[in-house]
Image (cartoon, rainbow, N blue to C red; front, side, top):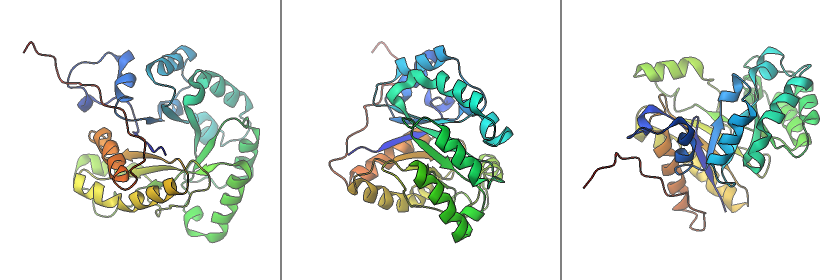
Length: 277
């Protein structure tokens, strides 16, 4: 059994006790976590040589969940995007088996399930797809929920929940929490997997104790998924993400305490400054 855990990025200033060249930061991160959210592709399609570098820095078992460019999801809202999709898929092809899923994050105003169904049908079948919706109707209206699930099930696609319930459980106490709460959606927690490969995005607080307490329902859900034979991926977010790398490993450790056969994470590479003695 394998649980993938990771963060919203693979580099952060607080993770570098000693300078790490940019071309080595992903390799270092992959010694801590075995998955990462590919958020940068939302803003620009990477060059193939850049993606080739990502592949060289990671083992074949490392997993990327790559976000579709905003030109596809937000600007054109999934309509008339054949050329953009072809270019994006060509750019990320060097990842090979490391590409865990195409992450289709939709705007908070998006409800066009016909356009979503058409896009999912057009994507080559060897690509796994996972969809993150933000419109409240999909969480509050049973009919809308059922319609979305029907579209996803027909395509073998997963529904990515972004659990921000802990973030919004109390008013912000810092600038980072205020910024996070101003940008993140405030939808109810959803913990229903549609496929063998569920993906969860969990957002905590500055306070580690509050973050850990808030993810306990996900520990139970993840353990259940593993025992059902699923292979979940869980991404840990905090307002400034400084602690997210260590917290991702802590989440994995809490699950492993209840699932002894779980495959372990890699051993982190040392990042302390070298000394003579």
